[in-house]
Image (tube, rainbow, N blue to C red):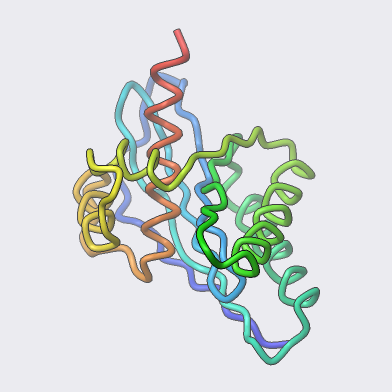
Length: 181
């Protein structure tokens, strides 16, 4: 069974001293490539801790690919200890098969989070883009640019799945601020 998980530690900055920092795992689900990103949010500021992607090979059985994604998301959660997860909702257009496959990956990611006690919030791609970029129909390059700028990263998060995962985490951090007193 071939798979690949890349991990990019983010540039380190000071940990917030207020004791109210929250770690959020963002997930951009996909069977071939699942992006993930860990941010820490405190007092209206966010910083990236790490990001990467999980790649599975098309020549192995789907259940094995799903198991790989589950196991690697579990490893990310255990390593970085987030308490919350933000995941992109399934976008359904004309390709029902693609939507079902992404739904399976979402289910696996949500299961991994639930098994380890994380709360999970779901956001549409439009919601994530609107929150991070300011435009609900932003393209991949705009999302990558804004994620880099907001998180003060030295390089653009690649692949775009990792940037999308960081964007989901940022969206959650910002939505959370609006609903938490």
